[in-house]
Length: 119
Image 1 (cartoon, one colour):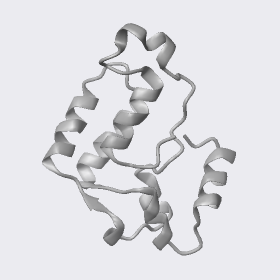
Image 2 (cartoon, helix red, strand yellow):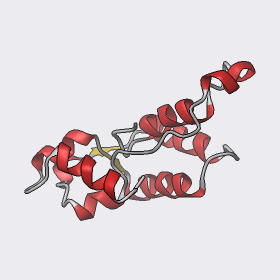
Image 3 (cartoon, one colour):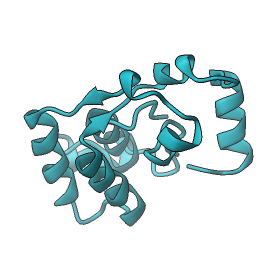
């Protein structure tokens, strides 16, 4: 479960889904290929009207991580699109951003994501 539309969150999700780069010799036993991206996506910024004040400007280290992630050939096209959107927007957010949104709470957000299979 990833609660970010941030690059570190995407990288953590990749480790769970595909296994660790440093432990690649044992990824068959370590990876969880069925894991889903349950957290924020870039599209949620507009959908839930996340205020710009809740967003965090990406750093040069974030940009470097993004380019590194985009080079991974096993990464799903959908995830690469999210990474490109983060680079384009120049911002990232954490799940706590929903706290500032009207008529949204974490439980309802998660129920909505799961019921619509929007991973």
